[in-house]
Image 1 (cartoon, one colour):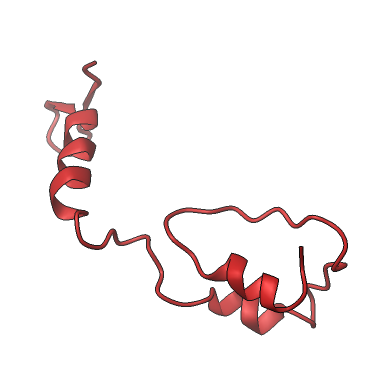
Image 2 (tube, one colour):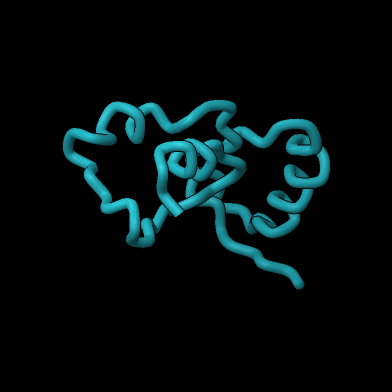
Length: 79
């Protein structure tokens, strides 16, 4: 599948899908930039202050890449 769009800076057609696939298969082989090696610092800072989820109810977490947030919340007693 080809996905082309016009680059606003260059004015040329660019195959965005091929660019992403190239990054995924080459540049991201070892460590994508969206993988975070620690718990989200905002989650840690706000947990117990402004973020007070009941431990017996589900929590919806937007995810992108690998995260330690789920393990951290489990260690805090969430299911």
